[in-house]
Length: 188
Image 1 (cartoon, helix red, strand yellow):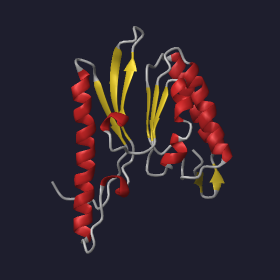
Image 2 (tube, helix red, strand yellow; image 1 turned 135 degrees about the vertical axis):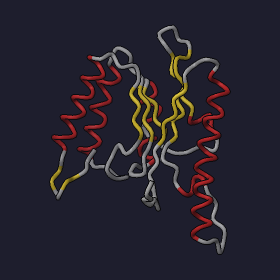
Image 3 (cartoon, one colour; image 1 turned 90 degrees about the vertical axis):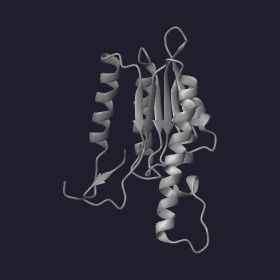
Image 4 (cartoon, one colour; image 1 turned 30 degrees about the vertical axis):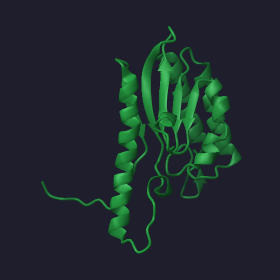
């Protein structure tokens, strides 16, 4: 939300989409909304972009089965997204803005109408370098990339392992925000 295209603000387009999505959630009786990051175009969204976000969350929270999970992407500020998380949790909208050392912090169990666990979500936000890797003096770029890749894999494995421990027949969904870097195309 808040992205411009060739210098043209797109608030009307964003608002039209968010209104359509809120209506779709209500009309189709959607159980859960999962948003995998990049809520905003940058880490310091303007008041108009913030207003669109919060106005969208109001009808989502008022829907017949309101459940939502939002994680931070690489364009989002983890602390900005997390700031209202306690208030949003009261509305059954869970926000995970930053990675935690405790895998339990990234597990969200959603109850069904009978208050029994209906779904476990591994809500893993964008993992920043500082969240998962320590720097060592003199390490090469290859060492940094290897440690970053290992750190991401280790973090996902830890959260998913904890989810399996809690699952006991409850479905588990893993969501995250990743991007590819250093890829190459090969034939075949």
